[in-house]
Image (cartoon, rainbow, N blue to C red; front, top):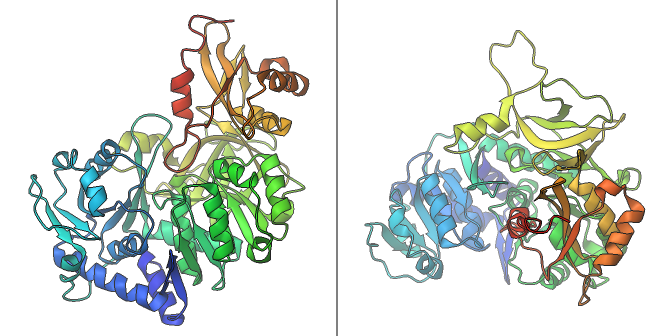
Length: 529
């Protein structure tokens, strides 16, 4: 089995050259043709002067060149940096400068939108435009070249010595505070992750996976790498409305769909063609807990599809999954460790927690990333010595300490309690936002709900709910509060419910808690009651 990222494509292209690797809009691309293009593009990158481990940013929506240039950069010995198409110029400038990108791959319209920031990107020397463009240097001296001109530099195949510990990618995450962090991933990280996920999802060559999430998100990129390692087909799409996803599932006969809770909540409220149940084999959730009501609605719409509830973090790709046969037995569990990973629950000193005792989730194994780019301080906070190592080992194994509080039952199944930095401390109690959110969802009175701890002069923090109403109705805050009073202890009852037409989202589709906290931070300054 290949150990380098680009070789998972070449390996499948050798075995099943005529099989469809990618679908974009109405065009199918075979494995053989895609491999040929990746080889040519990697040669062009080397011919244009890309050095080993130099960074190449891809700022495009999901299209053929987006996928092919990720793999071509890998084959050329470079490091690819997928940039979320939803980001704005200032955010992109930060990423390009932080990891000193030397080549940017984009479109003419997106290049035009970056005009105000390119002068600040001093390491950038080349912009490759995949559509029609006028070749001219920018005011910075950076060269803009067209796609045909770029490909003309493919004089001979790339022959760069690459091993699995070399860096393949840097994925930027929004983080809970401050600027985005660049998570550094090796070939070993990415290939091991693809193999692991494909193993427990039982992916095979007949699968058709819908890539609806951005490739800058590890969960979104996983749809491509998992498909390639399985010889499956990956269908690329950019959706405007949730209904677009349902239409694509039906028309493309999708067998596997991955989404985050905010998207699942929207999809669960729509009508699904009955035909989807004939071919959708599974659906997966990560990036937060899926509400029980949402899961129940999805299972009613596609009873033949197996739900996989997963927990992951970009720093270790994916950590746990709950087998579908366990969902009714353990509906609140995030499962056990994925193949080729070990997950522990520990005290701050690294000692193991007892069953039922909350502690920090620590992940060890080949999926643990190489740290945060250009940030040794944050790296040392999250990437620390693995608990329970043998005393005689001369080198220290590094694990990723997630910052998430979980517990483990007697059978080894894990349960998410909350993020360490999101736990609410109110009136001397520690309250998990997830637990309050689950109760609000169970009420059936809100479409979406996020629970936050907002500074309060008396309570320390007050429990505040940001919620969106069902359909076109107004949110009935009184009814929600009455339900909470019946279902939870007094100290957990929200102090305030704020209605939103739609909750703000991050570029990866997750609910943006930081934005909500900023909007609600002064709620109790003048009125503490």
